[in-house]
Length: 386
Ligand SMILES: NC(=O)c1ccc[n+]([C@@H]2O[C@H](COP(=O)([O-])OP(=O)(O)OC[C@H]3O[C@@H](n4cnc5c(N)ncnc54)[C@H](O)[C@@H]3O)[C@@H](O)[C@H]2O)c1
Image 1 (cartoon, rainbow, N blue to C red):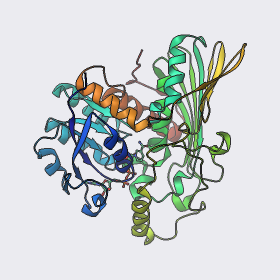
Image 2: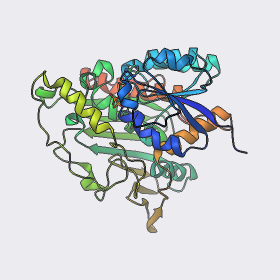
Image 3: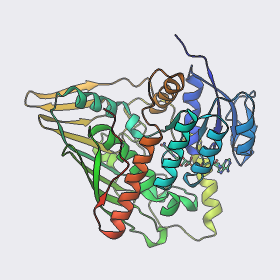
């Protein structure tokens, strides 16, 4: 039976928000009724005429007839916006990372639970079909117990046009919160148990564009599995060289628009925000001919290995290498919306709920802290979906 269409409002129509528009338009489960962005110009030309346009979140949250809201504002605003949306009785889909601190993330998760509302965190690259298929193989037992998950990604993240807060770690900026969140989501999807400890190093390699621009972390799991996570956002080498030329969203990657370089002057800030706004239109494509690649993920089990490829997966055992082809008709954001809709309908629990999102924030915070202090961090808020 088809669930009745939920009426959706969107708060924040930047790069992340705009990426959801095609999936919302395709979705049978949601109808977009209203959008809200500080800048009313942002919405112009992006949404149909019958979609209300607001500039204040309160107007959106109190508008009649909205069942659920998507929140794609900057990360340091998520806590306030999610708490207000929940208080107004809305189901919430919030962008990753869900918060800038574990305390805020847990607060949001608890508020959703107390209100009996769905809080979903996404999109995250753990939703990608190759990662989901790897998880199915892990659960099938075909490769025995997972022993190691290696995930690494080299991009030009540091030098893409950014708002200043995106480089400030305390506001959820830098590659650990912004990109590591995807990697930890992949790890927690594949390791098949609860993460326990983190050791890590973080790197700020360009004083002209100071931020955490690279990290290397080792995460141990209760079942003895280990996750090795590497990210480098300095753009000199790109991991698309290791993934048959396929980039994050499943397209043949094109070289970065800007060559890696330090920013010019502080006065360039406004111009950079404008550049970011312009880039947001179409930055994340609505369909792709190949599988998405957040760098490269390889899994070692007791009885074999598997890795993602442009068409799906390769699974290596003593019998040889088996190719598994996967469909490309659903994008990761289509899958996020399916999951959100099913959770609202009550047909299955949300895959990435507030507790899951808080566990990912805890991993981000632990990597940053381990990088700062050199200490091994014990994790306390990890969750595991059997
Ligand atoms: N899942 C993904 O792959 C992905 C990709 C990019 C960004 N993100 C996440 O999405 C969030 C936003 O990042 P972005 O790159 O889209 O930023 P962005 O700057 O492109 O977009 C943010 C939007 O929010 C609007 N906004 C800010 N404050 C507001 C307020 N008080 N009321 C209404 N609108 C407001 C801004 O005008 C802007 O249009 C971040 O948390 C980021 O981590 C996720």
